[in-house]
Image (cartoon, rainbow, N blue to C red):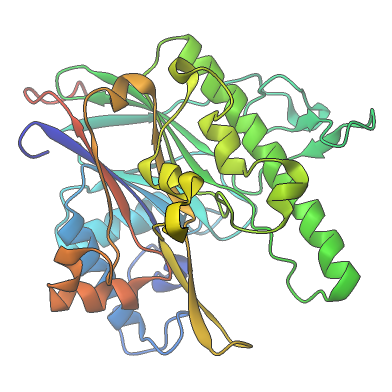
Length: 355
């Protein structure tokens, strides 16, 4: 926390899990990392540079190390923070995912308390259409065919209650929504899978929007952040369904007092002169070139927007400070295929949070 402002970040770290052994110790060696043409020590060092430069009070790590019978996302990230002397050195996670990628928050315990605090009814496999708990099942009829789809999160959103040092309370929902890419499919099969995956992603975002509505109705200060694998204008199927999932979570069709806000999403929605920020950079082998996309967002509730927050995408080419700092510029390109997004909020300073 600097100058009375609280910095919150989201950062999707590609293959973070592959940088740790089963005890959560970092692999700081010259063996290849899972990231192309990079050693584990190189990727780990690059991540240390990026996290240190961000100097955030809290970082939602998307694709955080695995939690399972032998591994702990919390242990791995706290070991990472200790290795690089980060002040965001305490970790908290939520419901484990079905993959080796978790949603875990690293935070500075001197300025914040963060507690996993899931909302909604625990409905299990039976499901509910009324904003059930995120480790359960959501039923929603996307096709208007009187046969609701049954939706689960492979990576359940992370719901946290945050308390600042002076007692200010915030709600945080960390998100990693399902990708729409039909890997390996071609022709009509690829189209079918793309539409099916789009339906699932939209249903997840409708589920998220229901939770957002509940928090806004309760007057909560809310932050929704993470990788949505989606955004305004990202593919042709948006026209088929009317809105992107990001627009659904933002609430673009509801009154202003019930809308979430992210300035980068707003720019993409406006689409003036084709200008849009980006947060991820991918190599596409068939085209033999890199492509960029806006996938990562930090959405704020109206009360937080009213405090004049400052957003930033730590893009190695498009952010002047990142471009002008050679070590950071190189680290951002080496660390992951996504770039961090931060927001600086007005926050009180003072005593430590309650234990």
